[in-house]
Length: 120
Image (tube, rainbow, N blue to C red; front, side):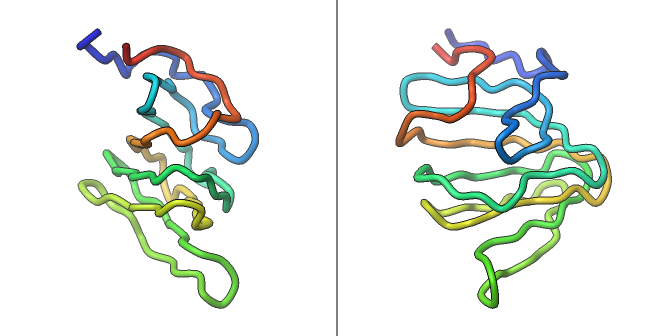
């Protein structure tokens, strides 16, 4: 409780369902915190979930997509910038170079992928 260690489980695939991100997935009863490495050319496919999510770029550069079809918005995410994903809005990223991100979610439902540790 208290100390959060993010530099473990580097080889853990965050979720095979839609992402190539590698790193730990830490959860409490209501919160999720992920540190993910996306190697150049990899990313998270367009997906959506009921949780709001904020993704903060620590290093590298990623192309983020919000929405789909003609309404899709694309932008570059650089170190020190974050992308906010509202509930149930399709979103995804692709790494333009090796990139590290931090992801924060308030859990609203059961997750489709496993945690590697606890925030409690």
